[in-house]
Amino acid sequence: MNKLFITGRVGRKPETRTVSTGDTVCSFSLAVDNRRKGGEDQPPTWFKISAWGKTGEACQRYLDKGKLCAVVGPVSVSSYEAKDGGGTKFSLEVRADEVEFLSAREQSDAAEPPAKKPVPDGFTEVDDLDESLPF
Image 1 (cartoon, rainbow, N blue to C red):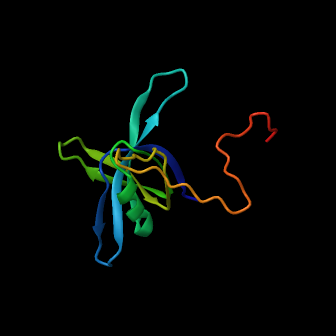
Image 2: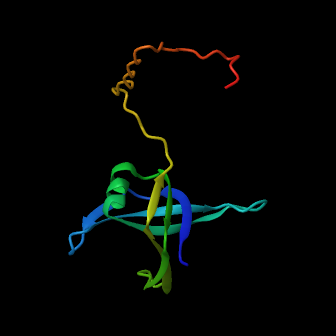
């Protein structure tokens, strides 16, 4: 089974493109901390993430640089020759089956508070609950 569960911060603004088949894919990088118990922190491990279809559309809409998210999906390794002559480099790539947005939503100052739902007939509105209630 090849399924990776990672949580990290988005490294750059996600980019969405349409491939020749007409499908859309959203690509972004994710930095995963390598904290060691009782030791020094290591540099983060970077993953390239590709999210397809509806998942990719949601990523494009809700993710931005620095946002925290969790990604689940299969991982693959690819290699390439470094442009600076540094030899062969390796890249970890995840095809996101699931993405969970973990950062709080940003609210604009102009946003209106949510409207109160009407109280059904026969019920009364409760502003403060009695702290002595056992539930």
